[in-house]
Image (cartoon, rainbow, N blue to C red):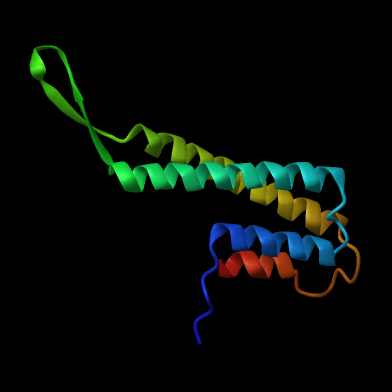
Amino acid sequence: MQQKRLNLNEQAAEILRIAEKHGVEQNFFFITTFKRYQVQLKILNELEKTINEDGVLVTKEYVKGRENVYSHPAIADYNKTVDSSNRTVATLVKIITTLRHGDKEEEDELLAFLRKH
C-alpha cells in the first residue's frame, strides 16, 4: 500500500509533532531553527507559484527590438532556498536526535519519517 505523500506544510507539522514527542519543542535552538525552516517553506511555495504561473523561460527585449530567452530568475532563488532548507532540516535532525528524551535504542522516528518523504 502506497503511503500518502504529504505537502511541505504537513511535513513541517509532522516534524513538530515528533519534536514534541521527544521533548525538544521548547529548546531555543529547535524553535529558532524550526521558524527559519517555516520561512524557507513559505519562500519555496511563493517561488514555485511564480515559476508555475510565469513558466520556466522568460524573454527579455534589448535595444533594436531583439529578444533573448532566459531561464526564469526565480529558478536560481528556488534552488538556493532548497539547498538552504535541506541544511536547516539536517540541523533540526541533529537537534532532535541529540536532545531527545527516552530510549536511544529505538528506531529514530524522525529519520524514518524523513526517509519516506
